[in-house]
Image 1 (cartoon, rainbow, N blue to C red):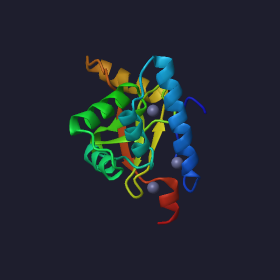
Image 2: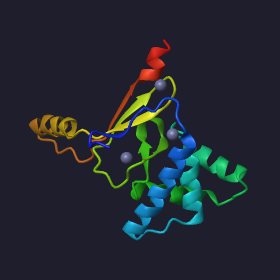
Image 3: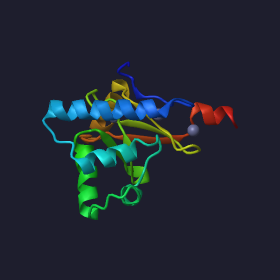
Length: 162
Ligand SMILES: [Zn+2]
Ligand SMILES: [Zn+2]
Ligand SMILES: [Zn+2]
């Protein structure tokens, strides 16, 4: 993995493998950070990793219930918060939804490319983009503290089907 791309658009692939790898990474990351991946947290993470599309908090809750697990809504919401803080998932503000991060220990510039056709999200990590933003903001005397970028567009596999 380069430091430029944290997660690419994958097209057709073995997603089972993605999910397994992501959960393994999360387990290792929690160990490293001294965090506890409780049963609910892990289940929430598995639900989020069941796809590359972002998923809203309410849908996570419904899927937990379908799986026969019935945590109180605050428990599920706290699990989401935990996963965001541990950087195992990201919150996509413009969609009010969550996406799994395959490389939580990577440095993060938080640049998200969101395909508005298939819903997949890729994650970029370009220092040059953040730097340009910080500089532009600084020219206005503004300190950009959370330069998260969410860009809506169309991914290559959707473009090729147009
Ligand atoms: Zn996948
Ligand atoms: Zn990430
Ligand atoms: Zn697409």
